[in-house]
Amino acid sequence: MSNQPNIAVVGAGVVGLTVAKLLQEQLNNCNITVIADKYNNETTSHVAAGIFRPGTSFKGPTDEITKRWIDRSWNYWDDILKTSEAPQLGVMSLSTYIFSKQNPHVTKNHLIEDLVPIYRAASEAELTLGPQGTKYGAFFSTLKVECESYLPYTANKIVEKGAKLVNGKVESFASLSNFDLVFNCAGMGAKYLCNDHDLVPIRGQVIKVRAPWVKMAFYGDYDTYIIPGMNGTVTLGGVRQYDSYNLDYCKHDAAAIRERCCELLPNLKTAEVVSNMVGLRPHRKPVRVEPEVINGLKVVHCYGHGGYGVMTAPGTAMDAVDIGVNFLRSNIRSKM
Ligand SMILES: Cc1cc2nc3c(=O)[nH]c(=O)nc-3n(C[C@H](O)[C@H](O)[C@H](O)COP(=O)(O)OP(=O)(O)OC[C@H]3O[C@@H](n4cnc5c(N)ncnc54)[C@H](O)[C@@H]3O)c2cc1C
Ligand SMILES: *[C@@H]1O[C@H](CO)[C@@H](O)[C@H](O)[C@H]1NC(C)=O
Ligand SMILES: *[C@@H]1O[C@H](CO)[C@@H](O)[C@H](O)[C@H]1NC(C)=O
Ligand SMILES: *[C@@H]1O[C@H](CO)[C@@H](O)[C@H](O)[C@H]1NC(C)=O
Image 1 (spheres, protein in one colour):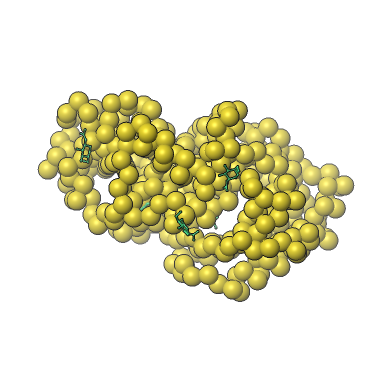
Image 2 (cartoon, helix red, strand yellow):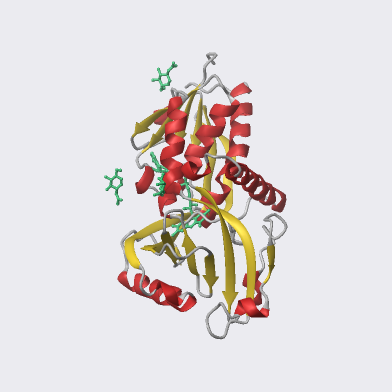
């Protein structure tokens, strides 16, 4: 190994760019090349509202690791919120109501109840803010990360510090044999790179509307959510279609989303549509953060974050970077 290791990061979504950033901070003497066939508004990360609210389908290899990823991620974003860089990075605080007509469980969230500053049951008076017939509700304070800002801002930062961004598709790890270490942050692309049958797409579709009057997030029954962003744009969702690879816009999904969101928050009826977006959540149980030697090449996998990759990118990236730094120092020959 030369004194300046050559490291490739495959993927320029929220996971790849966060890995590259943390790696650069930890190893001040390294040569990082990010390789991706999609950047910024072409990635799945760009479609996400980016709210910090994990679902129970998010799992690491153990409950302890899952909790550590979530806690460390929260602290990472919360520290950014305290800095003047927060708006440029797309990080903002967000108060949220969740309402249900049928299910008391959806108002609970064991992964963040003790983590966020406020998480409590909604009062009788607050339940009247939900649609007719609302029986259960909770209020919590959380944050969100807008990849529309986070991705280009982070890419610029790492390039300023010497990283290179390359446009291209990696057909196999064999083509990266000149690197000392490779991070695989390819999201759904890892399915083909690793022939991983445990990685399954969960299709999502959202409508971005202009509604600067919406200041809080709302969740309702049937995967309905309303999540405001920084500049008056609000994300309306959603759908969760398991094992669907369809990236085409579906007008029926859009109509259903709009109807459900307007029932949850009637003042959205007049909101003008900015865009419709579709993305495939890279779902895997557990999320894969682990090393592997592939034909002598040291690879650290970090993919399979499902519907929660924006919020959990930092916590998983911290583990991936630690694994990678130890891997570099180990004796396994990396060059073929
Ligand atoms: C509708 C919707 C709403 C969502 N809402 C939220 C939310 O509120 N909060 C939250 O935390 N998460 C949310 N998510 C989930 C989140 O979007 C994903 O978990 C996250 O974007 C995954 O990030 P990633 O970097 O792994 O993947 P991606 O953003 O898909 O990036 C993958 C990168 O790898 C590159 N790549 C792949 N294969 C190759 C290859 N062979 N060669 C070169 N490059 C390759 C791609 O070009 C791309 O740059 C949502 C997702 C959807 C679809
Ligand atoms: C950094 O890595 C890239 C890609 O392998 C290589 O082209 C470049 O020469 C390396 N730069 C240095 C200073 O080692
Ligand atoms: C994506 O970004 C590029 C470059 O900034 C822009 O030209 C293109 O119109 C954008 N595409 C969409 C769908 O917003
Ligand atoms: C929101 O507005 C600010 C200030 O005008 C700008 O810097 C930022 O890029 C905008 N963000 C998005 C996501 O449009």
